[in-house]
Length: 430
Image (cartoon, rainbow, N blue to C red; front, top):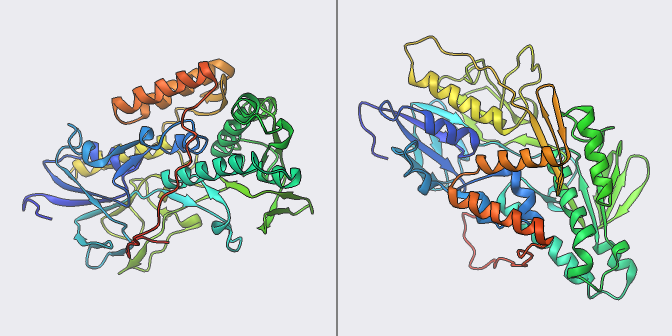
C-alpha cells in the first residue's frame, strides 16, 4: 500500500461498530488508515435474528465497506478484504491470506464469536447467530424443517422436526425465540395449513434463574411474560450437558429431542496468532487494555469493542459487550491518536441503557432508572435500531419491511436458497 511519507499508518482489524467508528473519527491528515475485514460489508448484529427468522433480507442489515469509504467521514481510508490470521508485533506486520501489511499503530477491533464452553464438537451441531452467513444458514434450516414437516406423515418425526430449541436467555436468545413464537402463534396455520399448532414447539433454555441477566428484574419478568404469551416454553435453571444424535441432555437428567438447536449462550473474542510478544489474551480471549485501550505489554497495539477487557471500579469484569461500548471506545481512541502531544483521555463508558424486543408490541428497555415495556419500549427499540443502521436505503427498506409485517402478519422472505459448494476455493476456511 502506498502511503504518504508524512503520515503514519494505522491498521484496523475489523470493520464492526468499534473499528468503523474509529475510522470515522481519526484525523486523515495525520494517519493513513487501512481497515481489514473478512467480509466486504459492515453488518448489524442486533438484527441477525431477524434474518434468521425471515423477517429481513441480509442486504437490509449490511452495508458495503467500499461504499462507506466514499462517505465524508471515511474518505481517505482504504478497505482490504482478508482474515488477519497472524500478527508479528516485533516486525509490526499483519498477515492475511492475501498480503502482508506493515503498521505504525494497530487496532484490534475484530469483535467476538461463539463460545461453546468446551462442549466437544458442539460448534458442528448447532446453529449460531454471530454473523450474516450464520443467520442465513439458520433461516434456511428453519424453513427446511417447516417444509419437511408439512410432508411428514409420522407425527413423532414431525414434532421433532418442529421442535426449535434456543440455548441462552440473553437478548439474542430472547429475540429469536420471540420471533419463532410469533410465527407459531400468528402465521403457522395460514402458511402451513397441514401442520397442527401443537406440533410446533419453541423452547428457550437458560442456565440461570432469569432471562436478560444484565438487565433489571422487571425487564426479565416482562420478557418472560411476553414469551409465554407467544407460546414459548421458557425453561430456567437448566444446565446443558451435551447435544448428540438430535437429543439435548441436561444436568437434571431431562432431555429434549430436536433437530434444530440455536446457540446464543456465550461469546468469546476472535483470536489471532501473535508473534514477537509473550502477552496473551485473558478470559474468553479478550485482551487486557489500560484506560486508554492500549493492550498492556505491547507497544502501539490497541484493542476496542468486544475483543477488549478494561477493568474499572464500576466494571471490575470489563464493560458489557454491546454496541455502545464499541462506538464510544472507537471515538475515544481516535481522539487520543489525533492528539499525541496532549494528555490522553481515559475512557469512561456512558451507559445509555439496554433494550430487547420479544415480538410485535412487546419489548423491554432500561434507560437509567426508567423501565419501559410493551408498546413504548417496542417503539423505542424500533427508532434506536433504525437510526443506528448504515445507509438511508437500508433504513427505508427495513422500515417498510417492518410496517408490512406489522399490518399483514406476513413476511415475503421465507425463501429457501441453499448456496452451491463448487467450485471450491482453497482460501475458504471450513
